[in-house]
Length: 104
Image (cartoon, rainbow, N blue to C red; front, side, top):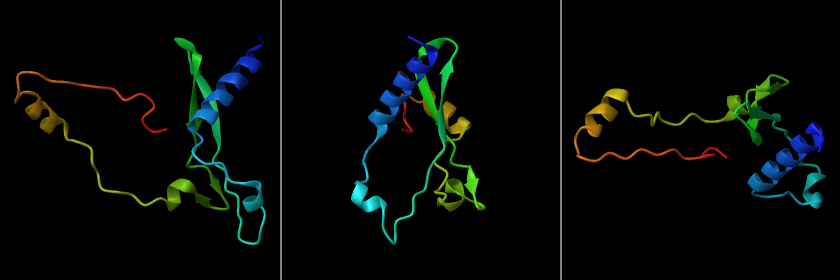
């Protein structure tokens, strides 16, 4: 299989897995319907060439407007490193975890 065909197959599979709602054709055309597109592209990690990672560019702007400019910023929920260290030492057993594809 050619590299472009492999890329297309991986990309298509990824996009089909993350689609939550497909807009019906009848709603795409009308007086109030505007289409906004979020640029994206796929990349491969050199150590894992069979798994594609799709990068979404929410900072891309069109006519001075981007998705990032229009999103409301929530409160900072990041834990301080000192707090994590202190809580880590409170108990005898500690657990850590990694959530794969958390933001998709």
